[in-house]
Length: 302
Image (cartoon, rainbow, N blue to C red; front, side, top):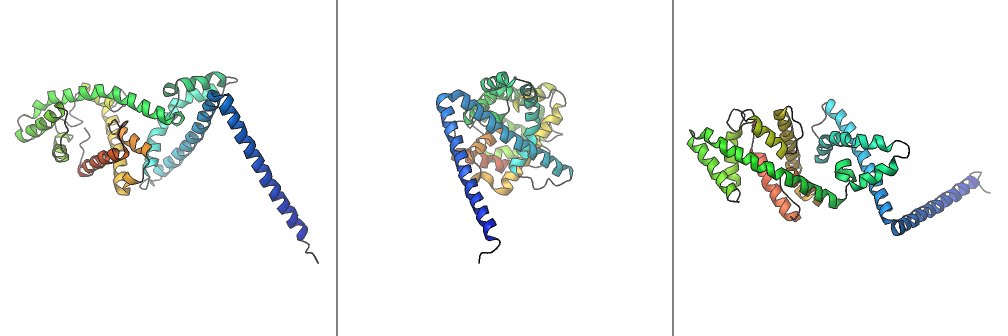
């Protein structure tokens, strides 16, 4: 004798099979359509895919930013990950950059103009979520080359201000040795860099409070900071942000677990052109950076 539940169970099984069949057919149709678009309308398909994928990632990061902001407001920010700190720092700028584009795209038929323009001028109109991996490297290199001009200006300012400490022969000699190495195209050793820490404290000639306006402007531009007002505050905030990232990196030993794209971004953020470096070379350089970052304490923001 059949149970009174037999018929409903059979019906459920049939519906499940039909659902699976329908799902497979839909997936097959989507793949077929994507292949057709990719073959017949390559540029259009590529543009739509970039915007679709970019919007998904951007929306996810905005939602993460809202959650992280809530955690910080409730003093629950001590366990933020490296990626979460990056999202919290970067998303406000991305939102400001994307708002005009989003508002214009929302207008009737405007997407026929805004999407091609965004595809043609991604650096000017879109945030990095909409860039290809090649564009990320290209734009990072372009920004780095712009910053190099201000590296030279900052170095010239430091050499001018070097003679403010000539009465302290030990500090003067340490600085002069490091500057001579940089002028000749070599780098000071980690030990030599760490020995310079005290000269960059707030109450010293190279400290953030002591630097002249011209030097502060060049420092801001060297770090890609666009704020013309509150230069010291902007620089302090930027350096504290990098310090926070360094602390998380050191705490979690991230060098071996991070992707090559994240390694490259970490190097560019800290001033190294990593375009042609291997992952091993980037890890080695970041390892040396972290040794200095871990050793330096106090308020040597400059």
